[in-house]
Image (tube, rainbow, N blue to C red; front, side):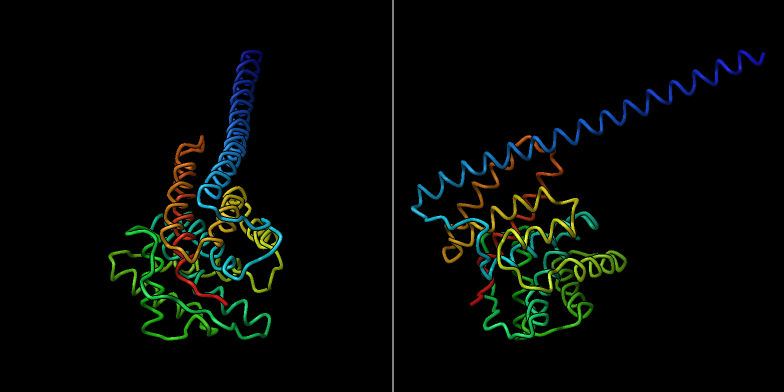
Length: 278
């Protein structure tokens, strides 16, 4: 009897061991596949960038070497969409993108004890006709129209959140109080409060505070560097973004990853034509 019990026990242990081993192998394989997919995507995007810039006669800047002032807004907005989406889905992505955008200017100015020469927002200037990027620009513009200069001031994050929620509800989007709290705390912890000299340093900051989105931030950095060079031409930004999105769409990334990237890139594209930063 004891021998049978021992045999059954060993059999169960063996099944559990092989089951766990199989699951671990599968998870590792999925990780490798995603990394491979991102590597292939980055290569495809590099080819697209070269082709687009050649066809439009745009001179590309030295990527990563210098940090243009607009980059901090675009990276903040895109990262806000990523983290917001992970907390509250599409509604969270809207809230996160707008909140990060509203916070980034004052945060940088407060830390450096300097006054931003110009942080202005153009009313209702958008690249897309709908979606998260359109709402991002519309909400920020409407708040600025009602509270002139608010993005130059060190305004309490909770107050900004209340203004954003009011505008979101106007357009039929509702976010829970608990999700708001989580995203406010995350925004305060991830929006940089120090100046960076290069786009590489800025991206590295976001990868450190948001390691789960490290691959996405590499793609966003590439997009930001290129879209900044054409940000004064809305039609060109629109064309570049549409082509960029198509490359992402046909990649081997899982569909949820594609949606995350496309939403964050839509926000960054719209943000590029929204802010005037001198």
